[in-house]
Length: 238
Ligand code: HEM
Ligand code: HEM
Image (tube, rainbow, N blue to C red):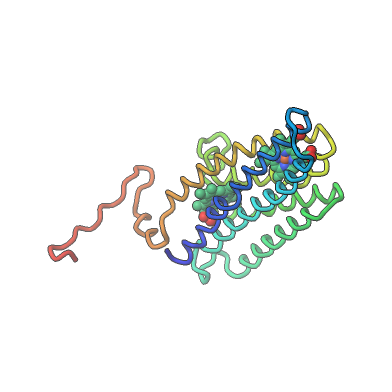
């Protein structure tokens, strides 16, 4: 494992160790909030509050691990001296990253409706801008192709959008039954996407070679699923 390989492990490790446990807790508290409000079961009055407090951290965490993945993918695609587009592009991309993080922070603290909408949209656009860079692998871009639906990237940015919606619309979800219904629908969809991301993420880990193995795998034909046979060894094993 080179330092680059460790950097590539950061995103999956954070997802497994922090995000998925949080999804379980937030989903359970969400179900309990509903049970309490509908009078199906007796639950402590703090349930709704706990759900939305941890929900905010979940939304923040999901955007953060996606930014980690995108930064690592873009920054390590080539050695620093050979960075595509040179220092100018690197600075531009760093500005997009900083702007996206600032907008996420502003969304966390904003209270006016217009500001929350604007910061949620800006944060999502920032993630999409970084995701659109040529270094980022997107299995397929055509919504009618199987590759698109099995793409870790597209489910990832979709779930980021859903999390930003819940984070931005917290006040409305608390107050208005209509928005609460939209929130439950969006969260069920997010739940399905999270399961899909676990599968496509694990698949991608399986397919990604370690850094030093890459040149050997570049010689493989990925469509025919064959690799060149290794060079025969001499009698002395050399
Ligand atoms: C795994 C993701 C999530 C699931 C499955 C989920 C599910 C739910 C459910 C079932 C309810 C109860 C609706 C009702 O009472 O009819 C709810 C309420 C709520 N959720 Fe979520 N949610 C999720 C994520 C989030 C996130 C990320 C936030 C962001 C802040 C959030 C904020 C809220 C708020 C403010 C309420 C209203 C709480 C109350 O009535 O006291 N949720 N959610
Ligand atoms: C909250 C759930 C997750 C979200 C929203 C998410 C989203 C993303 C996004 C947007 C990318 C960048 C595009 C790409 O390179 O494909 C990415 C990369 C990646 N994801 Fe995930 N992912 C999640 C969970 C996972 C899990 C559970 C695993 C594996 C166990 C995983 C493994 C990977 C790998 C190997 C990469 C390549 C880049 C890297 O390792 O830094 N992801 N993910």
